[in-house]
Amino acid sequence: MKPVNWGVLGASKFAREHMARAIHEAAGARLYALATSDPKKADDFKAFCPDLQVHGGYDALLSDPAVEAVYIPLPNHLHVEWTQKAIAAGKHVLTEKPIALKADEIEGLIAARDTSGLLVAEAYMIVHHPQWQRARALVAEGAIGRILHADAHFSYDNRADPGNIRNRPETGGGSIPDIGVYTYGGIRYVSGAEPSRLRARIRRENGVDVYAQVTGQFAGAGGDFTFHAMTSMRLPPRQEVVFQGEGGLIRLTAPFNAGIFGEAQLHMLRPGKPDHVERFPGLRQYVRQVENFGRSLRDGAEYPWRLEDAKGTQAMIDMVFANEEPV
Image (cartoon, rainbow, N blue to C red; front, side):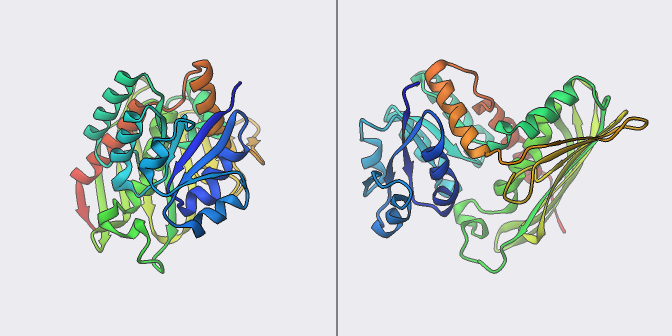
């Protein structure tokens, strides 16, 4: 497969530490260009990709005919604008989550994708990890029976960094846009169900949610089930997802930052049966995401997270904010 030439819009810390490296190391991909107005930031990328082409602005990178696909790690409020610009420039696009801040904004991206024929996706990396793929398959085959309840927890503490874009309302900050996409979207992905009602208890600081406890009910073909999802930027680090069924439960450890927060594991516990544990050491979901994007672009393979999927999670986020109660 001919490698896909990638360009990165912006020298963000996340791009430098994770996604740019993943593009550089992924099979079928080439980290070709970076757009940044700060040459010192470009030096950090050139340290692991010496032949990197550097453009002084985003428009200059989008005008580079050698760039086939663009990765966009900009602050949340810029995602829709620059995704649209990249599509208009004829580039395939992978944009960091959340790809939009309202579900109806994604409708415009879907229309632009369909008109252009380009591959446009949200960088929702967990669905590329076999831990999540196995959980989905086990639930679908009835390994724990009908789901009765789901719990999803994701927290970290960034109160010491008030200038962080996640702590600023003007950049689309908050725990829900940042990590609620994982707790809410993860339940949707495994269960195939959608929320039917919910209650959202939210604490805000400086206009952004720093703690959100969301409870309610999902409805799907397999029946209704209750759920509890907690996100916070003011609690000690915690990551865990549990699906409880009529015949047992599935627990996912390190479900969102596999290999960074800890080893990704799947535990299935069923009464009267031996505990079942699957471990996934060394698998890099960011690399797998890039490789899947390339296979979809080059070979037409189905991409596991479509814009329609992203829209469903954003619709749930919109529903959470519409039902907000202060803590």
